[in-house]
Amino acid sequence: MSLSPEVCKTMYTMMWRIRLFEEEADRQTNLGNVVGTLHMYCGEEAIAVGVCSQLRTDDYVLGTHRSHGHCLAKGASIDKMMAELFGKATGTCGGKGGSMHVADFSLNMLGANGIVGAGIGPTTGTALASKLRHTDQVSICFFGDGAAARGTFHEAIMMGSLWKLPVVYVCENNQYQQWVPRKNVAVIDSVADMAGSYAIPGVSINGQDALEVYEVAGEAVARARRGEGPTLIEARTYRFYGHSLGDEQQYRTSDEVEKWKSNSDPIQLLGATMKERGWLTDEEDGNIQQQAAAEVKKAVEFAEQSPWPTLANLETDVTSHSLGVA
Image (cartoon, rainbow, N blue to C red):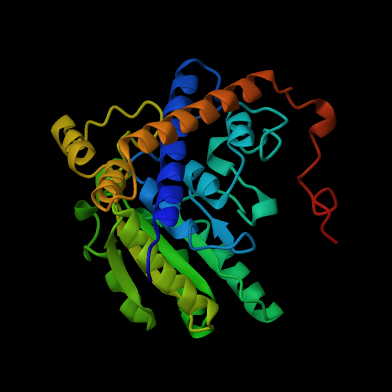
């Protein structure tokens, strides 16, 4: 699958948008403006962007508790995303979802989830719905390596394989299951190796390389769209911040974190590759970063100026009737 300068530039722009959004969300959390806790996606941007760049608007995506990047990469409004974190009525979920439950049904971004691995079953369900409706929509599920130890992971993938459903399971293996190194709790090092048990392709890739993610995700999405069934992708990555708000990170050294930031920052890697190929100038790079910063600043202003939900909104969006579902 060939990559064009335009596609790379679009991905690079989105990765900067996600990075600056996350860093600002962290700042706003420290200021007391973000409602609830925060799980940052910095360091993993190449996965969301590389995968979602291969999708159509009507394809389905379900995420994790760390899903700001997934939502933005699927096309969610940066203004409404920030408002959601602030708990405002103009947020993507009307201020009711917050950081861990962001969603945008208009984009078939069906939401994030605070329960480990909880999106794997529903993603298999949306894939089944697509098959029964005879559409070629593809479903994507993002989950962490910890979710591969849950029963729902095995149950869902078994059914996805058995029925050849149009679904791609994307494991974001960031080396740690909350505060525990994966090597301390897993017998099998690679999550992708589990795919053989269900007779589907399993691919382990460098999750810091946006180009590799884009290529592999493209093949998996195309396979699913052709009706050939699921693929399990393991993207090896690293979160640059702690698991969540207040994580003192005593389980890993500062040297380890700095090594990943210095050598494996997905944004810097993609930028360097594009410049080597003559696809990005220093001036264009600066403009992309400035534009992303301006968008994030505008998003904060939008969130600050937006109204709070009222009691009249208390029962909306919580039943099938209020959602417009017959």
